[in-house]
Amino acid sequence: MPLNGLIVDILIPMVIKYRELQDWRKRIAIEEIRHRKERELDSKIESARHNAKVAFTGPVSYARQGSRTSLVDRQIKVLEDHWYAAVTRLRREGLGVTIH
Image (cartoon, rainbow, N blue to C red; front, side):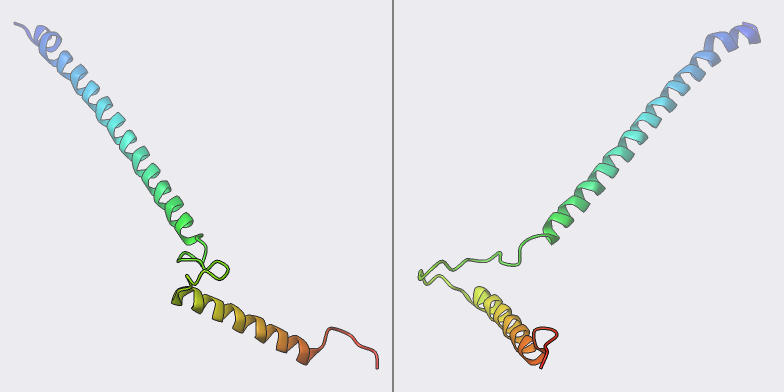
C-alpha cells in the first residue's frame, strides 16, 4: 500500500476522531466552568441570605406567656440601653434651636 493510501485509510480517520475528542473535551470543560460559576453564585446568594437574617432568631416572648429566654432578655436589654442613652442625649442637648 503506497503512502497516499496509508494517509487516506488510517491517518485521516485518526485525525477526525482526534478532533471529535477535542470538541468533546471542550464541551465538558465549558460545562464544568458553567457549573462551577453556578455553584459560586449559589454560595454567594446563600451567604448573603444568611447574613441578612433578623437578629431575633430565638424564641419570641408573646404577651404574658412567660416564654422569654436569656437571648430575648439580652436583646431587650441592649435595645432599652440604646433607647435610654438616646433619650438622655436629647434631654441634655435640647430639641433644636430655642429662643430665650
